[in-house]
Image (cartoon, rainbow, N blue to C red):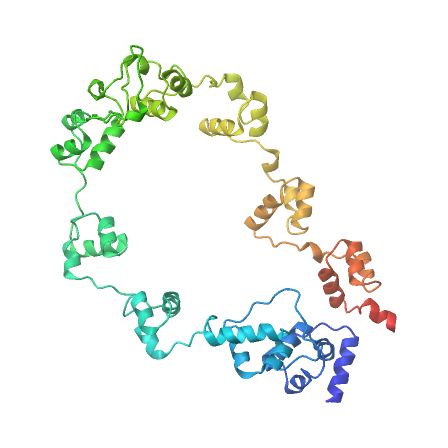
Length: 469
């Protein structure tokens, strides 16, 4: 025992790399040291990391010597929230193992006893696995006393599918509606409905009949609901056809909103009887030919201000009549402006011609003109030779491309990347061990972890170990 300990100390003096648990499993002699000394002392004797020793000690359920070391960041709790530790150890042992206070331990024990913290669910039995897929997940979860999510995850893990046999009443409605509508009614996928319908030789629902010239001429003469009954079509189909052809709807009896009345120049208030075709529902006034003549000649805001109505009403009326919006600031593209497209980046062209960048990009795409940007130029052979030999950041600095462009070009060619911290110069390695890792990291502009890892790899002892010799 003492010989093995002395050998481990000799190996630690040579600054050997920490042994991995997978390559060097824990032995009985090593387990006897855990819990007798501090985790750091055991790690130095056994040439392991303190964190591995602490995890082994917690696994064995042994208290730490002195105060349990507190991690720098909060480690995730197990799924059972330490329920097994609380069931087999006292509060005093839990305080030494977990490093918690007595108040926190008592609170957690009460929570585990009252069921406020859900414990680890019981393992699945063979009888429960046989029931998977025989019933819907919601029904089976209620029967087994488990959550729906647990049942779904277990069924997917066992590759069990829920089979829904076709009933005679389900097959009767095939072909009466579209496959999508039937799928929504039966709770199935449209592809499954279509496959079963074709398997039974049932034709799909006939496509809607084409609109005739007489039907198109009848649009707008009656309200959509009444015209749909005459034409034996749905109201949605009549509305879609009328909107597509740009035909205004037939207005019915209109209501008069008393709180929104307006008097004309003669002091009279228009009533519902004076409303003509084209007036909006619920409107207090109808549109006259003189008012409609203003649409498209002035902006919507100017028309609304002149007529004394809302902007939404003016915009709605203009849309219904199909009058384009008049924009005094609109400029047509000149041949000189079009000639600049593609000669330089869009943001520069936008500044030259005093337009938005999105307008320049849309016009360039409309004319199918390729873009021009120095950052996205073709790669040169000498630039491609640097990929995989230098880090992406350094290649981007030398070639003028972005880091993302360098990474994309390298991955498209199947070239492995070079880690920036892997390139250590002989002058940098000569500084290892001459001072603390923090000081060396500050000098070389590297992280402390990178300096320590490189020092371990070169088997160079720490600076304070050299100073004590």
